[in-house]
Image 1 (cartoon, rainbow, N blue to C red):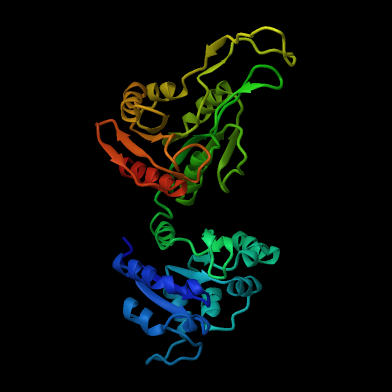
Image 2 (image 1 turned 45 degrees about the horizontal axis):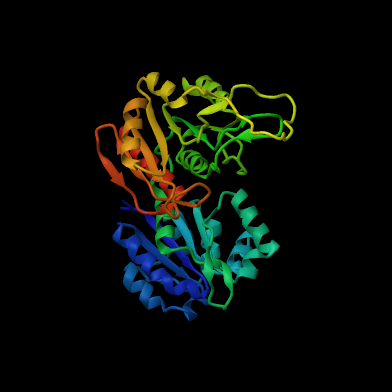
Length: 396
C-alpha cells in the first residue's frame, strides 16, 4: 500500500534506535522506498550497515558525505520525500527543529522538506514532562508537524512512566495514515454524534451513562484528517473538540435529536456513536428535590429514537450505528442493523477489558446489513475510527 512512496527515516541518539530496523523492514515490505539518515549519536547505538542492508539504500550519517553523484543531497532527498519520520525523536532534535537549527544532515533535511514530518518522541520520563520540551512540541504541532505520543512503561533509565517509543506497529499505522488516508474523504460531509446525554430530574440531578465521547471524537478527528467536512454533535464530555470540525454541543436527547435533524440534510455519511438516553423524567422539577422519609418513584417517558429517524430518512446516505452491549452481542447488534436500516454497525462488549467506556482502546465487530460479521483485534480507538472510515470509503 506504500508503493512508490519515498520515506525518509531519521534516527537520533536514543536507546530505542535498536527498534528501528523492524520499522524499516515493514515499510520496505509495504513497497516504500526508505532512505535512512542517522545522527552521529544514533550510530553509537546501531550500525549504519544494518539499516543499509534492510533498506537497500545508502545510509547517510554526515552532512558532507560523497555518494557518487554531484547534487545537494539534503535538498534532493527533501524534494523527493513523501514523508519524513524521526524515530526515535530525542528532546535535542525536537528543540533544534523548534529553534530552526540545521546543523547536521537530518535537521537540514527537516528544514528543507515540504513533506509531512512525523516525530516519535522517546526519552526519560522527566525530560518528556519538562515544560520546555512540552512547549517545543506544542509550537511544532501548531506549525503543522505531526507527533505520536510516547508509550507508558519501563524505561531504559530505570524509571517507569511516559517516555517509551510507541510500538513499531503503531508508528507504521501512523505513517500509513499520513500517506494513504490524507485526502480520501475530500468533498464529503460526515455527521458524527458522540458522548452521553443528560436528562435532568431537577436543577442538580440528572440521568446519564458512562460514555466519555472518546470513540466519537476519534471518528471526528480521523474524518477531518482525511479531508472531510465534519459536523460533531456532542453531549457533555471532558474532551476538546478536534481541530477543523464544526462543533455543536448539546445536553439532552431531545437537544441531540433537534441538532441531528438540523444538520442531517448536509451529510453524505452519518456515524452515530453517541450513547443517548432512552428515557427522560416525565416531570422536571424546578427546584432541588429534598430527601424525604419514604421511597420516591421516578416516572419516565421515552426519548425520540434518533437512529430510527435517520434510518427512515437516510436516502442514499451511509448510516453507521453503534451497539454497546453486555450480553447477546451479535443477536442484539443484528436486530439493530435491521430495525434501524443501517449500512453497518460497530458492536462491542463493554464488559471486556479494554473495550468499555473511558478506555483508549476498543474491541469491536462490524456487522453488515448483508449478514457479514467482521471481527477486529483490540486496538487504539483512533485506529478503530480509521477502520470504520475505511469501510465507509468502500461503500461510497
